[in-house]
Image (cartoon, rainbow, N blue to C red; front, side, top):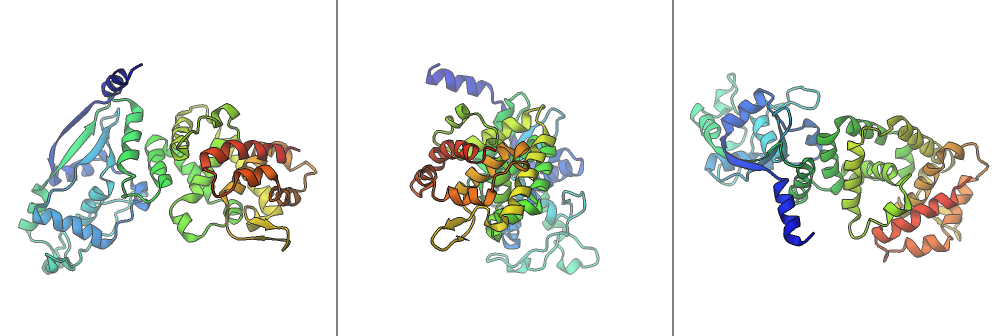
Length: 368
């Protein structure tokens, strides 16, 4: 297939429409449950109160707001693909926003800005505090302001929605690739997202990886869990497909996993819990730290290359590892003088070159 045929094929699989809508219309969609802004996303989008105020200021001043991208589901409801924070801010200011427990969020109170210093302390409308509320004309100014919408129609290829979300939300509105993946997973398979989130809070897993606050805030524990689920039983031939971009490979595999109706939650959960029970009992927070032979101790912080050998190797053999006579601690110490590990875990080795070598190494090292 030539380039033009590839272009024509993909253009046929994407159907879109676009037009302008008033904020009053956006508000009605939310009131009538005809739009899904996915309240689970709120933890991934970290706008400050000042940034939120800046959006309301822009609307009042007539500054154009970037378009909202939505995808139309089979039931006709719009999934917000790009614009969650913009719409959430508007709904929060209007006192409509609900969290993932369907509880009303405290309405946004505005701050002082450079051009509108008198916005400080202003609310949408509080009958008991009219002085600090917008006037009716100011509220109407906001409700009549327009924001363009681009709609990915339901006839489009299903993957186009997630591809669009990934492309639009890696421009800075979300901090990490895993946060983008988590949002895609919410849209694609909320049951799997909730299951993974619960598993990522497993105390033995958290103790073994011992991540600092920043990686935890950026969902790195969820990424490590996802890597475990993807690479634990992956076939060697699949590892060769990683090529240039490990992040895209993980995202594609996650989408495949979420769409797999035969995915066995109970087996994967048991393998995960068994793996980290073994590691917790034998290693604790030393599980993925570098071992110094000269100092006879584990040192430093979490190393993902060690995780790829140890967690995935034990996870591959989870059925027999607990009853085997393997000394886990000694095996892990051996890893740090293993020539293959040293060769493929160095700072100059890319993840896409490293993983196809380290995953099989873990399966060999921890074979009962």
